[in-house]
Image (cartoon, rainbow, N blue to C red; front, side, top):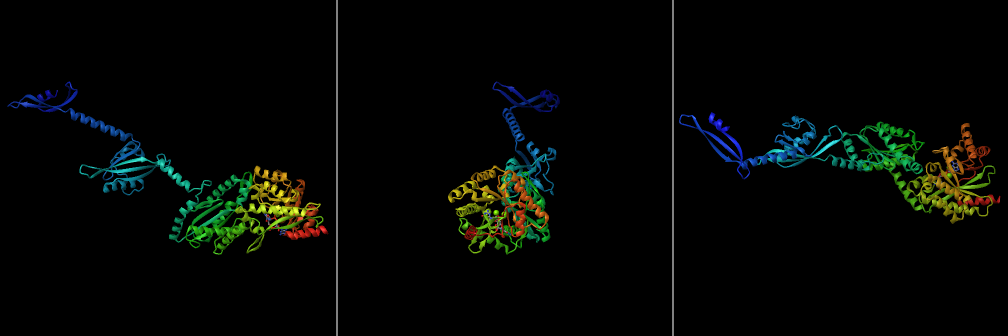
Length: 622
Ligand code: C2E
Ligand code: MG
Ligand code: MG
């Protein structure tokens, strides 16, 4: 056809022909040129053929390769992009277009940002231009919100300069890998390291990392920062009494309530145990601070339902202020701690601000603890005995309560209120309690020898001793060692020991019952009283607390309360001892209402063992 056309028009042309010359298919390029006679008329055509088999195969191979690479790029999970030297996008593969979440026509030929825009694209823009300028590869983390808004996608993009034949950078290739999952995992681990697993609050590590920035900002703005240390009151007895899961619930609820009180930039941390820290920046004056601590106390004071019981919780708060009380977290925490300790001493639910003198109180407490440790094997401890009498014949002794005293090396004789709490917190109450039981049993055995009416010695046992260790086993050994008859002992426990809703309490009480040891409930009506404990647990006796006895005669109502106690004990067939009797009318009232036994200053103060022994002998002789 080309030959005809050339002959007809005189215009040359080229055709590609293929023919099988025996050695396989070969390609020829044939050029036709018209030949003219001397008049200029076409008289023929010249055909020049060249074997172009090689070139054609090369071109095919190239197209094939190009298709292969394109397919690789188009189907790669990684994102692939290419920019020109001004950062206009030349190419993006489908994965890249998906990540950028825009149609191709809005991407190709465009800059990733307008010059003023910030954000992740700005970082990409600058990185690409830097690669063009420096001619060196670079890495870039590109973070974009995931399409659909669930989380963040993170691509780690490697930027490589591409050069032309002259060696100049002519484009930049970017290959990005999705590392979202890895980054999310790392971030999760990071956040776990800084979170308290129980309450999900920030933990001590987070406190130490974040607080310095708050102090630095306050310094710049001339503001104060309050560091508040908050410790729940009586958490130990709830935790020991109701069990750890109740304790956990209480801590979570505390965290929730505290969190609800705080402002956005306040930092709330669980330090550990029942200790929380609040770092509140931007404290202008004392009034603001007072408002915050009041709010915290109020939030905690709402009644709390825990395992079917209603509890009232409170916390003691110690406050130290940056920069007046310290320039860094450590001294501020130490000062808040001494203020908190002081708040505890003053009663429950209080706030105390750090004052220089307070530091000494903490020092004293540490010294006291060290000294008590020395004394916990009994050296320096003493039992005093307070007579218990028959209210009808008041010179007839029926027993005594053993009350602990500590002869401190330099402070002199200390009453239990000064050190029992410390002993409970430090766990020293267990060896101390064992010593008390042993000494009381020995005394009971000695004083009962040759008596016809038994003399019963009452021993106070802490909740911690009651739920930890093996009180039953210990008692059995002590009775055997001292030769004390179980009827000569009474164990006084407080209501918090019964709070634990578990078989443990039942087991310990059953153990004591099996031994034949009398169990009395002390301070009844002053704590978390609930009558159903009395129905549930085998308790033999009740002590009417001195606060009720001292109300006798003050009002009709207070009289009625005492009468109700007596009626209840008699209905439940429980022994009754009234304590804290100071006057004759109190004794008379109690006897008239049916309480048979009493204890109090009216009949004798707690006294050393030898004095009590003299009293016993004098009464026996009389
Ligand atoms: P408690 O068991 O209720 O002991 C009665 C407290 O009332 C004693 O205080 C006693 O001295 C005091 N008292 C007695 N009669 C009167 C009175 O007529 N008027 C007034 N105002 N007070 C009176 P004490 O000896 O200071 O003991 C305080 C608490 O320490 C005890 O209260 C008891 O809970 C605890 N305690 C004492 N000894 C031990 C012990 O060996 N182990 C444990 N775990 N706790 C102990
Ligand atoms: Mg007692
Ligand atoms: Mg009592």
